[in-house]
Amino acid sequence: MVELNQIKMKQETFNNKAEIVNVLVSEWKMKKSSFYNTPTNKQREKFWTYSRCLRHLMELRQDWRLTDYGRERHSLHGVPLN
Image (cartoon, rainbow, N blue to C red; front, side, top):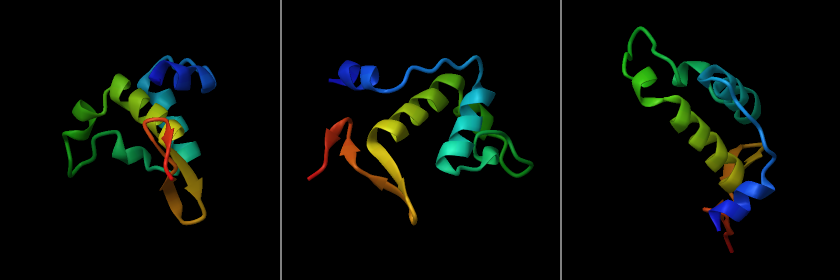
């Protein structure tokens, strides 16, 4: 099931984490500082690796959609909600 949904998504290649973060910021209105270290939080960059950022972006595109009020879940792992 996952493979079928990934085929439906447009194929993109990212060379590094910064490119993925830029897409998350532009498409999903997230803050860039959420994925990098800040003066008060030094652990974010260790957690948000390239593969985690990519997985997060794919899950957002697959299971969520943007509304005027924020994000809304429209499916659960590719299966539409009733």
